[in-house]
Image 1 (cartoon, rainbow, N blue to C red):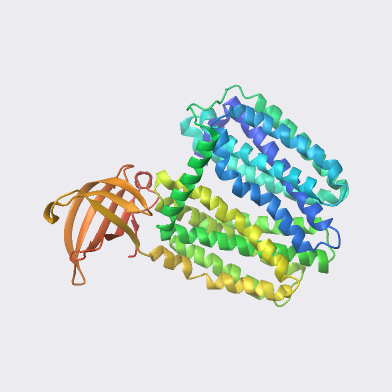
Image 2 (cartoon, rainbow, N blue to C red):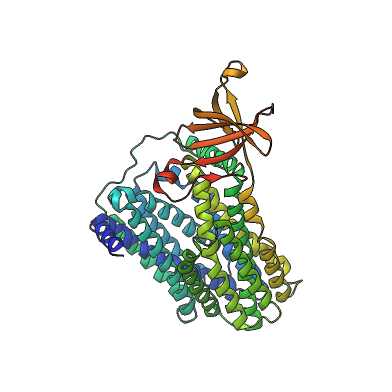
Length: 503
């Protein structure tokens, strides 16, 4: 603890970092309040001819679509313009949009409201991505980890607090009051960023925007290929996507029940969030206790089991306390799924692909909520909340064996050899997920397992990863099973053993 506090103090010695952190936290508090405005306006103040589920679906779409579409391409802009200007001007544009929303919010929700709200959320993606990109320029290398941790952890907390505060104040101050408060906060955030002294200009030259966008899309496709060839990473990612889908269904269901059956307002949604947030805190504090007792896929499986059982227990009688129980359980089990899943993806995807894979991970995390809300619009008029909650619980339970099975799945690669006869063939490259990469041979040998003679190679890729592959000695197939893969960063940091595939 003393070391962490000392690192934090060292990072905060940078006045530019203090301005960045203060501006980011101010902006993220306003983000939470703005989310409360959207929920209040589109769900609880919606006209009677619009269902509650439809209102939630529209709110999710406004919040998620920019995250899914703008996020992966934000770097194209960030790497071309002054990053200090982005940090200073983006909040001003968001404040202008918030002020423009005040007269629009007095009437029914229409295209102007959705357009301005999308602009606000899309600009937030640029702002947060830029704030992350400039961190290494403002904090010494040895303090970078704690600087990122402070920005991420405090940012998540203040956004959540802003959302809670907004839901509790919405009835008293109205949409205009919420929008005025967020606009003022964003003006302050822009002023703080403008006081950063470093220029923060990108160092490398760029091609045209069209070229950069095409390159970004091409990189995402390459990341998707590598992900598809790595079941131990694909499984956890799909599991988190499914979890967010089911979470979205239950969230819509909870809001519908509180509004239409209990006649509660947006403050009730804040209470659901508060209980779920408490569950997330408990889950984050307890997930470490599973380490050494369960492997990561089993921790994810346990989390799905707990969530499923609680949903089934609450399904027969949906009342206020049972809804809060489900909210707490889903919050509790979220870190039990997310943290092991993040770690599995980091351990099984080489460093050169991680940025692209985690951009896809963002899509897999956010898009299912919109799909869930859209499905709920169709299901809720035809099925009782009890059946929907029970079905969600069954899906949670059915997923329990999937991630461990994916983690054990075999991985395959194609080996391309140097020209020559069989006796002197030497591997020159590996092809994994349609991506070819050159290799050096560290060793080769033959061994026998269960009466089967295997031909094995130990290879090193260009980034220093070490891969062990094998196939039957007499097999003429070009497919080789990947037995182990060791990334240089994982190995030197000691964060995990060599990954075994299909063992």
